Image 1: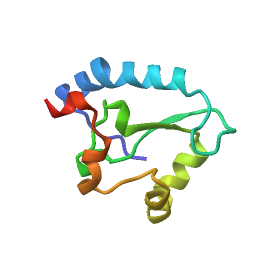
Image 2: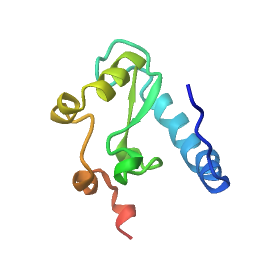
Image 3: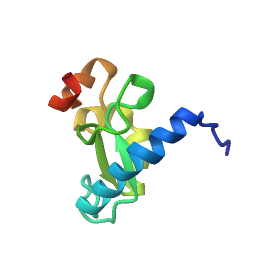
Image 4: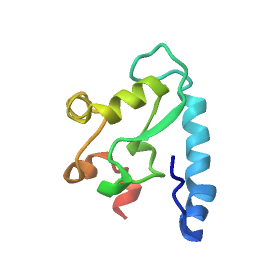
Length: 101
């Protein structure tokens, strides 16, 4: 598996912004919000970074177990229909009022 390089700016964003949000969400949602049975392992972006989604906005993040996260990423059409993924043109639905400023 290839390891992607992170720029210093991206690394700072992860350390200073994303990591605290992930810790808080994992504390709030220790059980997968999709299946409701397995422990949460991953924080999934509803609108992916590649589609312009925020990696630090809790409104765009959901805690999933590894099994459900794998399902969401391998079944994009079904995941979109269930609301676990969204297209870039839907990203405004996952913004908080603070993002509008």
